[in-house]
Image 1 (cartoon, rainbow over the protein chains, first blue to last red):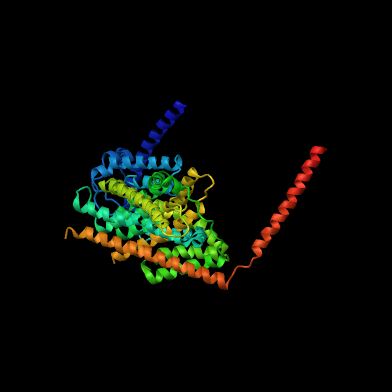
Image 2 (spheres, rainbow over the protein chains, first blue to last red; image 1 turned 60 degrees about the vertical axis):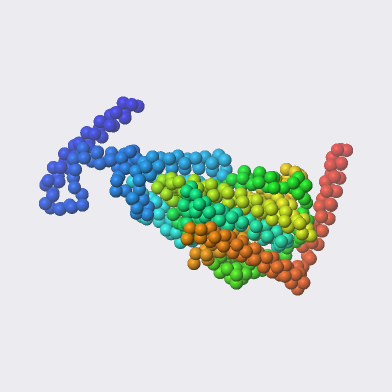
Length: 441
Length: 76
């Protein structure tokens, strides 16, 4: 075997040299006739050197001093060399988390692979002419993809549980305190300490992670702080994936044993007409109160309306499956393109990850506390465990409420009760997003 | 100028949370009104419930048949 390879190598080198000589002879003859300007013949040694210089190894060791990042700015040498290697290793870690640990693999895998591609030297795929850059400009920088995702989520959402117990919508509102509380915290820390220095826009874009809503986070980040998009999207999706780890300790710390065993009254039957009127009604409210939130709420309710209408099965099916899957691939790759070393390996990223988890925890806690406050008033009691579902990670947060509830009472099914605040959380975070955008108008 | 940002943040919080709750409260009220109207003027036909009743009866028949078959089989 080794022999054959060796023979091939010798043959290859020999042919190369003869070809080279022949080429040189031929070129001297035909030079006057053809006047080839674009391609100049080079001696073999120069070509080999040129090839060696264009390898990834050489680009990682001796970076091109004139190489620009995807925004056309200069990068530090670290971001061209070791930084890229670190980022590629980070994407491998994300692969592991997605495949082995099952952390939101549908999004984490495209994002991580996009990040891997974006960190390849020389190829410059995340640049404006690379395919990642083209996808980014096609739908992410203009907020198209998050809106399309919202349509699909709308087509998958069932508002029945919310309609049968409307007051649980307040829990979805309370959980948005995670967003605004963190906003104040981030601004205060930027102001009075030297840990980090975020502007008001950046702080808003970071704190929206507390809504636990990936598309909304991306929507806001591209509008208010596109330079932080990669870190915000990664933080948002990884915390959504870690809902079953982050939420239960907070929920247990804030509730008593008796509260966790509260049984809720069974949900009444919701008629089809109610489900059909509801999306239009919410959209009308959004139009009247906060038109700034209508891109998100409008797309969401459009998807839901098609589903509930029951006459366009094909369209609603496309939205729930084909469309959302295609957009997810593009969205993941486009977000991944922002994971290039020069944008991700900055101190701000750590601050964003830290603020994100605070926002998320505060949101969970305020949902639970809101449920306890509501229990002080007369009426049907609410199990505070469903308060945590007010963050809009649908349906993960509701499943967590159900699971924690079952730990204390095996027959207490909270899933459908928790879906109410869960979908209200989606509406709530869309409203919060609309407010944040309107502040900066 | 320096202290402004935090005050701005607090303003955002008050206004933001206020709007979110206002929106949801209005939504809850209109949901209740909508449900009342729909239940009053457009009640759902009760056919769905009666059909499930029939199904339950059918199930009982099937169960009876299966039990009979099993006892027969055991005796045989």
